[in-house]
Image (cartoon, rainbow, N blue to C red; front, side):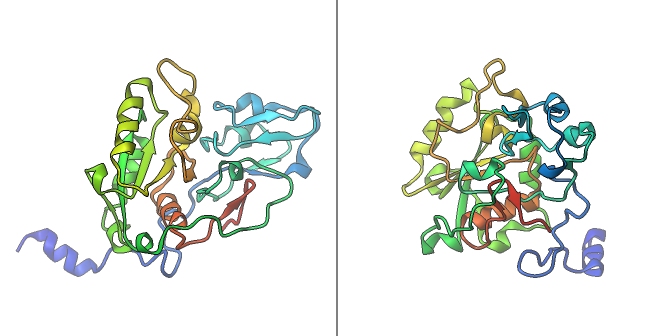
Length: 264
């Protein structure tokens, strides 16, 4: 018997029980999206906007506070380092999947939670995904690969990746949607049986990220395909992807409303 077999038997089951129970999601101590504290923001200060590499932060037109779009945020933490008044603070808010794009834009008053759209009953427990890399740096792909490792074991949740769009329920797109990938992406969507759904995974797919507007680089999926779920992050970690997939299927609640996260 091979040595790895003895090691496996001695170590026991490696798969986490999360999210069914416990909080062993493997992301403890991981920095997520910066948390905005408007009461600490100094009037006329735009240091955070100047430091932001993706245009997620812009100074408010009246000179008071900022406009913050988490759909453009790459969680680089430069704004938290540049802010002289701790109006932007590091946080562990890494689960930022939402149904509506506007929920990624920070507003002063958090909207009332709503159920939103849900998958038909037949899709909630068995979901098949076709992934398309529409021009990414492979950061998101690295996190997607981790979903099938022994720790996360995505299959235990009834969620599977398929090689053919003709067997897929959900089209998961990463990357900025470059010009060469535009036609293959649309062809993949058209090949999927209807009804089907689309998820933009990663800040590049949501808004274009730091490459937005570059040579041959697009602005993400908005205006290209009808998007049903948005998950920013650079890249979103495996636990964030799992939470987004389960929230999309109606099996977990959406954590973010109007840029406000429930936290952990």
